[in-house]
Image (tube, rainbow, N blue to C red; front, side, top):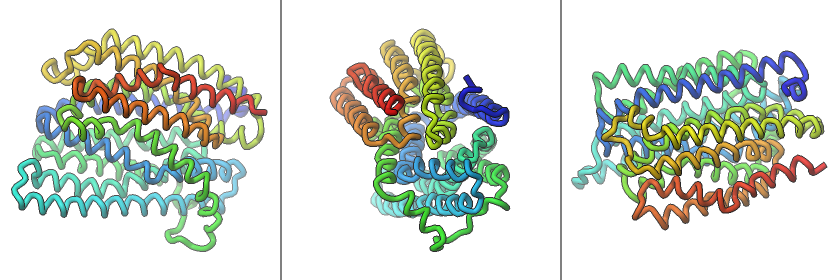
Length: 438
């Protein structure tokens, strides 16, 4: 299978390195959750941990504001790396990097404004708002700038078919975050340790990523010079808007703790976090194979070799379905016990149906990633966005209908109901039409 798509030994090694390092990163990520979440709950309590869960969800969702550029940027950088046009690649990377960092600075400014407003409420004797919450948001503002710089560097590495190194960059950053958390929380048991640890991990990722990227060669000078106007013209327009909407719905699917936290409060957000985090990690593990194909899909599509790509996608689809089924069955059978071991029996949801619906969500979300990655790489955005809109708003409707009697479980039920009612078939119809369009 690898020979049919990668064709050269170097590409084969790059792809294998990408997949293996992806799973190593997921393993470290899961280990981090296993280690730090019980520490957070034991140190902060359910209420403050709920605030942390909401904050982390908002950080992930904040990416939507820059999502309009990510797909188009990866496509552009991948094409330039493929033809080995170093000068234009440097120009494009510099522009993308500046936009990402600029967006991070804007979000940081917004976060600091929120801190100022919370300070006014604090003076008005609002008991739910503490100085520690203010410190946490302020430090998160700094982290956001590093977070988006790292995202731009990772895009450049992936475009240069250096996905393995992009994953290792994240691995070492995650290890730095875990180590900083365990060290600092012993002496400063406050929630602002979370963004401090994230910031330490982000700086480690950035330094390693720049080293991998060889920033002496791919420097992308600061500023928005006229010589890079062609980059902005390529990234803006209908395609950029399409990627923005696509990114909104992708990240909207990851904002469930923030949604349920707004509707039912931080404790329900914390319950969703602990009941679904292991399942979500299984989903991300199943996504890695599809996501690792993205730069090769772009390359083969730009070269017009759809027949070669079609064969591989069909084989990958079968592998993904088997992994999705195995992950779903595992969580249905052992999910409750896994969560109890992780956070303790007293902190784990006891309702059996939570784990059944979580298992179903693992299956549906796992098998949907391949058609999404493929349609995004081929810029088949119009139909994809329509399906994502049905998916997102359908799930939101179920949540709004059920959150009062069922709380956080309404999120997991919503995923199953919407996908089983035809949305999953719609996702695969997009990939089938795109694959056989020629």
